[in-house]
Length: 283
Length: 129
Image (cartoon, rainbow over all chains, first blue to last red; front, top):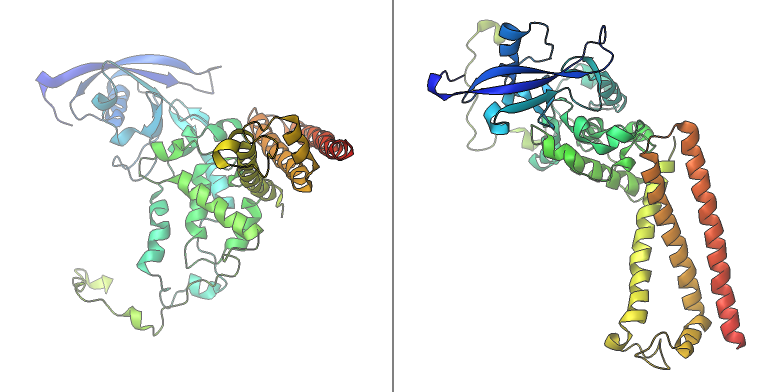
């Protein structure tokens, strides 16, 4: 944080508080926080905890937009507290609340477990018949750069829950799985190494699948990592509809084979060798 | 495995395409007749598709009777499925969700039967008179 005494502005942090042990309903509490240029919302919360109210609760970890822990509603928009600069979003009043569409554990801590449980039911991992190779790999599976690009952006998801908080369908339909689990299901569905289409179709073809999405697109607008869950959901609809009409290729797709003696295995021209190991035990 | 939601959504899209084609035909016949020179479909007066002789001519055609029925079915399915989605977003419980589906299905079937009867009677009447 840049400490410049001439460039510090006082911003009122209006924090949504709730302790299920004692409170009947959430309420707002104001804290005046000195905000220098460059201060992020998370640093403001730390200032409150260290100087004004030690009971304030939130969840955070990496402080650099990687772990997805500090998703919260900042001035009405789901975002990560660690990579949102206060002065970019507020002049003198900053509203901070837990992510909507989730239960509240306490204060700014949302209960993300329903999202993770749904995520798990959609099998977010590579599914293959050769379980022995998956568990004890002897080689790598072949995948072209184009096949990688099909799912790459969806693999950037950090499971912060911002997309779920922004989704109007999640807010109103308890059966709908939501953008995070669906985008991750599509990420593996489209992976050329995966053979789990039939298994995931069990869950996706029904009411929990992508059918309730009416493409508001807010999930993609708020994603702090630039993932486009709305696109994943529309593409997933296409795969499922083609399969329903017996026109799709996913049903009969063979997962990518092991590289083996494939000639493409060799290092391409212009790519330098990896540097030598610096630790003896890493060899 | 339940394919119900996949099936409903797929037919929703197909119904949309059918509406696009048949409603396009309707708009052409009723509003662009003179521009498109559709004297074959409005033989009495190409500038006036609502002239009774034009209406009676089209009503006699099997193609138009079938297209009316198909358009009615597609429109009802597309519209009522959309209405169902809106109602389900109000957060009804499992029993109410089933009731909404059953009610809209009943409404759709009744309106389709009435509309089909009207199309058939219109053709019969036109042929008779």
